[in-house]
Image (cartoon, rainbow, N blue to C red; front, side, top):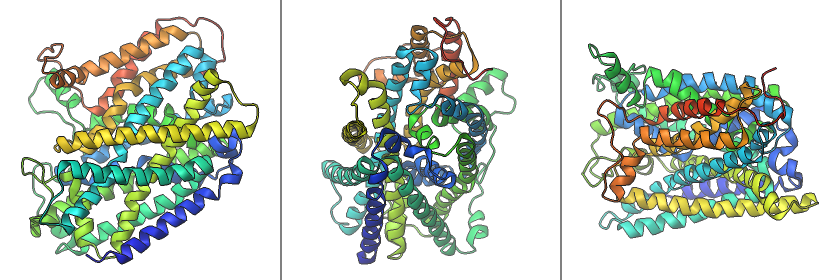
Length: 540
């Protein structure tokens, strides 16, 4: 396996990324500059940054894995909700944040309700984002393990050796990303994202064309081998002919990719991730005004459509390719079943020519570093604005404030590494786990509570109290945890039984968790009248 050209491509990539990040130091010497780029970033750069944040390494490998496992495009249905939610976020959420001039979006909740709601919401974000970003971080290390196994076919890595190799890769990627994020702030994040999304699109495009050129007859030839009942399906209602109403409702709630999940579940998911998550909203607030921010947000949803079709198409074509070209070296799990998560990286390493292989590997790193850098910046910003200044006092100079933000960046880099290593350990011992449901599922337990409180703040004037909101958030989490079967999962770890569940009650899938969490939180919060007159909500 000739890798000299691949290494050259990767070294050049790292060099350019670090140069871009470090070049932004002089423009990130204040709180506004470090956290929001002084609100002067061009809309097209914000758009690229939003895409880079959405398309993590989990998506880069996980979405082709979904295409390979399911052999259809039903995952793309969720794009409908992505677009609907972006329109609502652009019309309601973003104008409110600009009007209130917030840096951490949880400051809006502080103005609307009080300090308890602000810090409770910020804490939910910090914990959830650390867990979600940490689980993404281990994904690109899959390719290093495969590279080792291919170079040493007579001796595969033991579980501990694979874990140690993963740890080394995590440290390298995280430290490199932390350097330019801590020095260059949000400007470094966004301008490196512009390069990274370009590399990613090229990598995906070359992968798709390369696969099509190696399948006889191209796409038409591939379709002759995809004749299953749900092969190439795009829309799936998830219902069963002749079944009763509740049976069909239960069936829909227990499926990940259906039309109902697209129009309802996915809309609430995106309202939460793009309207109440500091990680995503912070880059939106770097635009020059609310109109440019809205333009970038909506167009990023439009751009998601072809990208999602491409990554799923790659997975489907991989299935066809390996049906025509069996490979005994394809990675399998403990049951001897081919691991869908590892098929695409295996193909990259074994079939792509040097140079092109390096470009795709750079694309993997681009997705990882892009999502990691913005997570570090947003985590540091929320922690410093919502907690650190309250606990330790706010420095009087811009230099002192930025120094604290850089400390926060390093602190959360350490926490993300710990979560990533824990995730890698779990997945190594449970190889049947699928990547996308893990990543998306984490948000589902908590972000419904966040969205419910933000909706009370945005759409009502005199409902929701500072302490009552916390009660509503806790109840929203508990309901979602029970409906999702979290009690059963925890009980299994300790060899016990769950809380008990009627046979008719569904165990809801991840697209529905935020919907139920939002509904419960919103309804409960409405039961508490506002304790005092505060800043007006979005309702005039």
